[in-house]
Length: 171
Image (cartoon, rainbow, N blue to C red):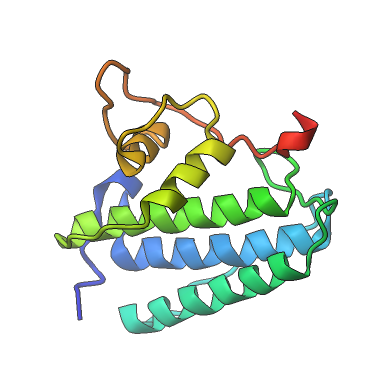
């Protein structure tokens, strides 16, 4: 089993910290879409002390399933609150994928693992959440740039960014 205490410098935490963050993101995206366009979150998910990396991985999978089922049950006109803007189901699907791709990459890098996420998913995330991103020959590299994690030839590294959560039909 990989070392859950390994540092993830880009996030200033450990692999376990990032795993807990990712699980809470997926949980909140399902909650926020189901709750509607007003912020109603009154709770936070708390990491269980002593939970190992395998338990966190199972939790991420479970929260991903909760988000997927919430998305499947949502109507095209449904909207949910997010701190970057009110979004439709497609926005919440994209942001869930973005979190999995970006933090999956953060963790793989921290653990020295090689991984190849689906290029079409990264391209879809860029198109939906980062419409200002340049055309991408390497969509994962461009996603790293869009989230301030890497340089992109001919572009300065981003020091701040936001997801474009507004539904495409409302832009």
